[in-house]
Image (cartoon, rainbow, N blue to C red; front, side, top):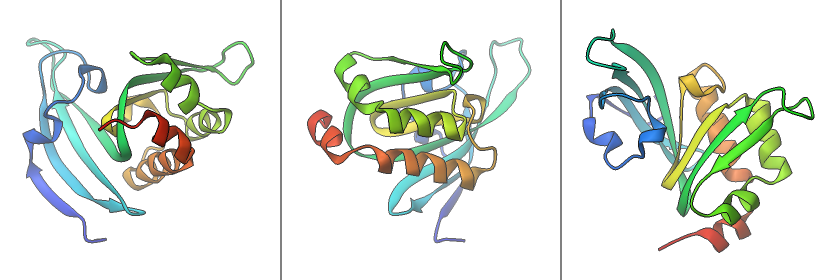
Length: 164
């Protein structure tokens, strides 16, 4: 459907990803990967099967990653619902604080809250979230929301912070 591609297993899908993008513990397994393009933007969605520790039961979360238009500095974004103004406060952590300030304009912050995301990671050329990180529950809606957020970031922010 949609010209997307399915792979039952593809461990290389998370090669080089930052640990904050996935649950803590030993590296899990990538299952049922779906790749393709949505609104012209490459993406991947897969099940991540993992254990918090060797004694823990196996758990499954869904991971969604959408390509960014440029390589960017690492950025971890977290929403704290019910912050001081009632809408929640966004917290961003990364080596380039100026990137976080410019990226998280009022409209982008509003989008993150509107879609209900609580954890998002940007790293190099990908925006990553998991089903544990809030947002729409079904995969296509989550993909639509992430694509929308990426598309709403002003082009000058991507131009200023893009890396080779």
